[in-house]
Length: 473
Ligand SMILES: *Cc1c(COP(=O)(O)O)cnc(C)c1O
Image (cartoon, rainbow, N blue to C red; front, side, top):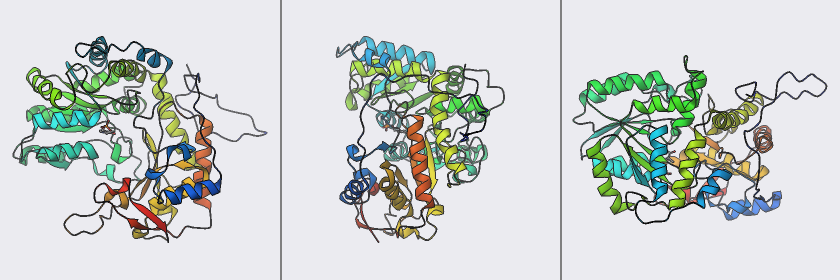
């Protein structure tokens, strides 16, 4: 057992006595993927060619890639070995039954419908449960989840606690559902097909929801006879936060906490690209037999037969094994511990970050990096560009560019937050990479030579942040 639950803030102890016991990842490296070290001149050219948009950079020009944790995890030797055991039968692959058994054991749901990734499950769930005019409450929206709910004719209503929208509030469970808000929706809306609960809440910065809150949501929904559908994409990360922050759970394992948490819901959608440690895949779980039949009827049209749903047999095997590894406490301690390690280095350096540090990413507050820039000069986009220029670290803008335009007025949405997300892939980078990132972010923060911002020179119609192009002002 490591002597400490998570890596503590490193103290540079030259000449002093080292007071802590160090801690390291519960794995060693068997195969390496070289990454290119670029010069400042090469990065300047690459960034200009990419229109100052990190989404348009070629991955081979990136040194440390913190764009997203989606599908970017490193698989273990046991998962890679599983790929060789792929049963590629069209129907009834043994890997499907292995996956079904694994999901039942760890998540506890009765039926498993595999899909190509999370949004495939969201599509099917929305189509079989939502009627036009329905209302779906949720603890803050996620882009694809809300899209499918609205596409099926529902109106989404945000019922997350107010703290979830406040980047400086250090509350431990900023993903909690506000029970009063939820009750208001349940008692006034014409029809609520289900409540959508996300764990953790991605758009709030990877913030968790507590077991007590989930239990209370369950009791409230049971009184109103409304089912709960979990977005379980990062539910194991959520379980780790319950273990370390909620009284009464310190001695329980992540796996046990996950089982209890899921028991308060009626099904889930899942992106295998996050917690389950694979590069592609997902599933829909349901407890209700009739609903599961409907989902199986639909999955054959959009994804594939109900025993593969868009995944190869080998992909299902790798995911079953990934789930098994993802619920291990040692894995989660290292996963969340690495994100916290980066967050603490930045806090010690005085860099403005969203608090508390979330499960999958550290968010930089770009407004406090560049108070001289107006929102029309794209402070977060500018910061992401500066980070790439400094050391080849790729991050993602979450500000006015991501927020897009109001379709009616044609004006920009002006979100409260101008953030840059440093998202940590699982088991990919070492502590030394995190040191490089922290030093680079700190150097950019302290650089007295401030950038003048950007202007948008090409703007696509939909989801503009992916393809927009900029030039320096
Ligand atoms: C990534 C994600 C999804 C969608 O999953 P995909 O596999 O990308 O389709 C849904 N919900 C949350 C919270 C996510 O982070």
